[in-house]
Image (cartoon, rainbow, N blue to C red; front, top):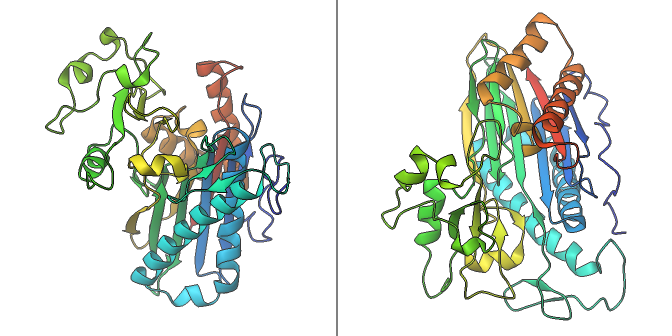
Length: 377
């Protein structure tokens, strides 16, 4: 197996301060591999908290991608845990952008060094082509990658916090206030995101002659490129499917009744055909030629003085089981009414999410679930 990549489910936070301020855990779902990973760090003088979730996809390659992302996060920040306390928002933005690129490139290196299922073989037949795509000796691309959601809180002199969220994919991060209100710390890079549709459509036609198509997952439509388009040519969602999705053969993907959507390649693409539920990710090198991006969105928030907050970052194995407002209320009840520690809040909320997942999706189909939380007193 590759160095630093754990096949077993993630261990709980090992930082000695984690049980008081930050805690994370994950639960394996019904798939063969645990593809969710997480990590956290606290700066030298406890001014900065860093927490992250990585939700892999692609079977064992997803495990490799998410574990590599976690390990790279820690190796990147470990020597910077004192210096980072003096970074301003532009400095944090640059470092986070640099980190996402480093993770992306390191995943490529890990894919190149392996021969599937973690077996090392030299030479293993894998190559990087002129476009940076990792391929098997047959020429077929290596499938797999991971989401990445990293949140940073910086304590200011007046006791408030600047909170920065950087993400690719759909591992949502939220900033929950003690009054149960919440704000998103991440962008949802899904194929139903109008801005993502416009981003892909605006890519240079010479550099991207074939682009991702954003489609709904329609019942009994087995060729995904034939599924109905999410967006009309003018960039607006097709009102037929917005107004009556289930009557037109669509199906919900979560308890918020959001229709299942995919980003897929056109019919003319064969060997590198792509069908993915997000428009940005780390890894997935073969999909980049069609417009999938590894560049993170970055959001910056500021807390209010005298108000307590909780940051929550989770994979879709958690979020598929909640309406966001209900999760916020649930967390606040654990926090304020039951007076649970951050550790106990995470374990309780994660167990509840898994129970809901099995109820909603079945014991043979529920996803891996991962949750990290951080209190901002």
